[in-house]
Length: 280
Ligand SMILES: [Zn+2]
Image 1 (tube, helix red, strand yellow):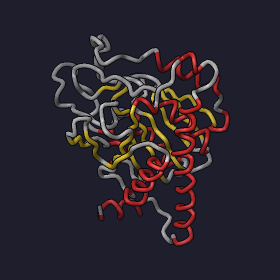
Image 2: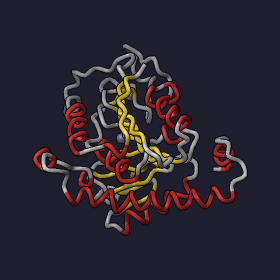
Image 3: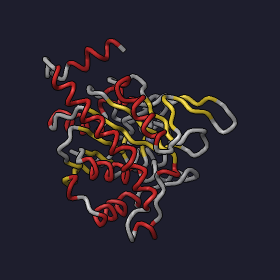
Image 4: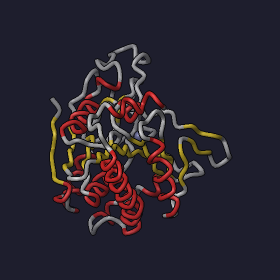
């Protein structure tokens, strides 16, 4: 059983964010990490679950190092947990954040590891996915936004991933447009390196497998950075402005859209998304 820490979105304070930050940073590794954190067969799963009133779920599965079935863990997407907490706080949304290293729900290469093979075979067996599915069902979540980090070596500052995601046409263009309006150069599904080489985003197993509409958003480090000195007196203003202006507005648009859909909806069963999936 996974250990779950719960908090209401409206109860998240700066002190609480600092406390979570301290816990999570104990596990952080760098790109040149020698790999003493060996992959395990299974993990002591621990998550922060944020409870909100608005039926959206914001996730940060890569807040900590994660196991992709390869011979060492992949480093974390720094500070994505902060984005999730801040978006939840500002939209009264639900959130799920990994607090300890875990099996990656997003990209698994289980055949690569010959020694100490993992017990999970695919996304749907990974604990983070199962917890997210539980939250989606028990809290009637209608939309998932999966937050990730992206290197700073690309032309764009954010990429919205729609790979197989349900409801993608409804949200991807709007999110891109809104991020762009706020000065964040954003593209959908691919970007280019600084020398113009095309880079496709091929991940997204998590968003693809969950049965509600969802998008994966990759955000470059510049828009996620936050140093400890600034943190002790509150998060940097520019950082706060970024998610407030981008995601808050996007979630307001989302709520409006859901309201409109509610007006014309006859079938309230969640299987409606399966019908949509077969059309994509
Ligand atoms: Zn990631």
